[in-house]
Amino acid sequence: MFALLPRSFPLRFGIGLAFGGMKLNSKMPKTRFTFKTLSSSSTTEVPSSDQNPKPGSELTDSVSVPEVQVFTRKKRVKRTVDVVKQSPKAENKDNNLCGLPDIEEFAYKKIDGTALSRKSKSTSDELNVGADIASSVGVEGKAPANWEKVLEGIRKMRSSDDAPVDTMGCEKAGSVLPPKERRFAVLISSLLSSQTKDHVTHGAIQRLIHNCLLTPNAIDKADEATIKDLIYPVGFYTRKASNMKKIAKICLMKYDGDIPSSLEELLLLPGIGPKMAHLVMNIAWNDVQGICVDTHVHRISNRLGWVSRPGTKQKTLYPEETRVALQQWLPKEEWVPINPLLVGFGQTICTPLKPRCEICSITEFCPSAFKETSSPSSKVKKSGVRKRL
Image (cartoon, rainbow, N blue to C red; front, side, top):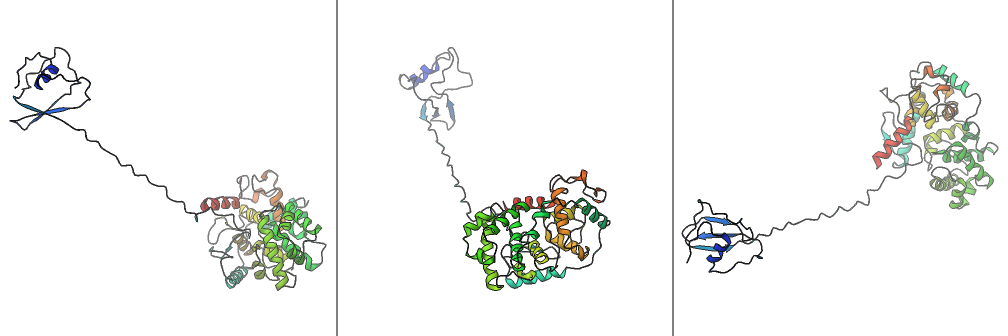
């Protein structure tokens, strides 16, 4: 059945003879053929018909042709790759960005530095915290060197009274009103002053006065939208308008139209923090229970090296820490005037960004002179925003 071919015989024609003289189609798809000898189990690959050898090529001497061959066609194995689509994880709707900080200035800080949230505690807890803070008043501490010279130098620089706080501070609110109405005006002015410049707060108070909306009765009866329009553009004006309505109702129901006369009760009012409460006690009731520490007093006290965190030499992080540290050494007769003095100094010379050290007369006593370009409070705010996001 199989004819022996000479070595020079074309391979394609030889394969055709092996199939009984049938001519192979040159258009057959590419594939591989294998053949097996009946007498042997070995398998040898033979190239497909499309792989044309060059004319005149010869089979090598090492290839021996078996007598009987059976050709089979190898099937290609299709490999399928399963792609698993991973569906994106559903976003947690509860994991929202943190909202803006509460306008009640800052959280309470115990003497050991442990933060306490006023609004998350019960009324009794809040009273206890207030008692803890009040207990630190008058604690004797070591006064920083040259603090009297520094204070006198600041007084000389502030002698012109050209800062906004000198004419538009909270203590100026309702100065011509009767005592009871003035106390309420000071309270509302303190509420509006949070995160707001003095001239903006002053403008809002004047608009309330002109519209006869600076008494508990008037605010309680007024529409909240009207109050928002009058106090705009103070910071957080929407929330402050709501708090004004709440405060007015509390004053009417519990204090006969007057304001609370104790620090603890003031701190229970919505939107009123430690800085505001001490300011109201000092101005409205002439009852000095602590230093009113705002962002200017906090910043300048740290720049001068007057305060530090308990047991360390690090700067205080919050105004409440600064207040406690200041009260440990500053004479009590300076507790009230220190606020407008340093606030005006911070508004005109020792500014938050790029303080004007070149015109300051106390640089020889200031460890931060010509060094600092931003306030410590602004750094705390920026790091607090990163942690929430």
